[in-house]
Length: 251
Length: 187
Image 1 (cartoon, rainbow over the protein chains, first blue to last red):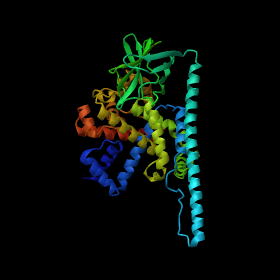
Image 2 (cartoon, chains in turn blue, yellow; image 1 turned 30 degrees about the vertical axis):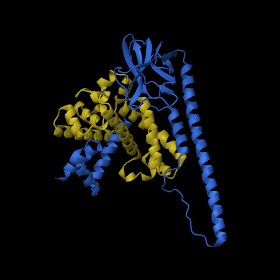
Image 3 (cartoon, rainbow over the protein chains, first blue to last red; image 1 turned 120 degrees about the vertical axis):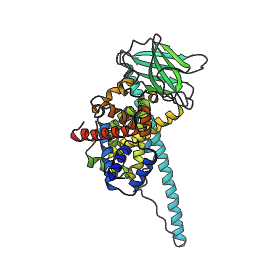
Image 4 (cartoon, one colour; image 1 turned 45 degrees about the vertical axis):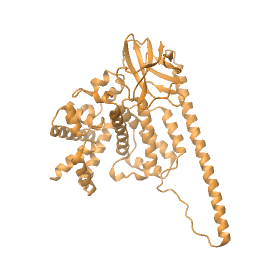
């Protein structure tokens, strides 16, 4: 096998498409320390990364950053470079007593740190909820936004939702409460209905209280909706409703 | 879209590795949009993309000490991490639900055509003017099936009814063209 063929495999490997014996052989070749293939792999990955960067950008909601900062606040940084205690055996009773005191103080320090991290975590959650509430309030302040009340459909018991729907921008926020927790491998899917035509409007899951604040994707142009419904579907959603209707509400 | 000069982004990752939380905030601000946009393109669902965005940056926080600048830029590291996690999710969905919409795409049907017909039409717009949009159709198709849908070369050959050799040739040509496109200009 000439080396050009290894370079070809490096490119297909960068795309994540190499499989079977070719994959095993190439990984063994890489592990042998082939600098040329490493370089081709790196160049291909950089090109793919730049292709990803060339996509027209979507801005993530601020609530994600707030939640993340809360989570890393509650989590120790990675181990490299982290200071660790180094213990040496003390000699004599005094040294033992000192060691005991240090141990006690260390325990208190760890306990205090844990409490601080818990507090930071809770603060992160509160800040995340605050950002979410602000987003809802900002949305509500838009005069063209309509409020749609969705209620449970028998035999489904419990659960209701409010959809804040902007028919001009075709955006919305759905707030649910009391829905049954999403079963494994299932998800709720929202639909905009115009007569008998149903347009998929996003897939979501709920927490233990059946709550979610779900931002709809911007929906494509279609006839104006007169109704919204939620069905239970396979995880990932489906283009046409197949599951039972859980909630429904008229615009 | 986003990003920092190479030296600055590598320096930020080193600070992350030392547990610098303010560096984390700066790194997130520089690259969150890249990861989020790429996640939407891969998963085609905004809420799932938000979850993935969180997962990727948590992994960044945890794995920063393992980052090796000699193996690629922080952008390439982030993109690989995002793709790897997204493909795991897509494969998991595919295993559990063979009717998952993206996996039922008939061979030869373009991504844009499908997405425009569905709820994710807005996501299709992210392709406009991208480097990928400038690839010839047959090259773009195999690259997308591999890179965005996570199919192997054998699966792509079966999906497109093309010989494996043709699929490989198109993938290589797509990647070479992509390298030329992104090398010549800032897209």
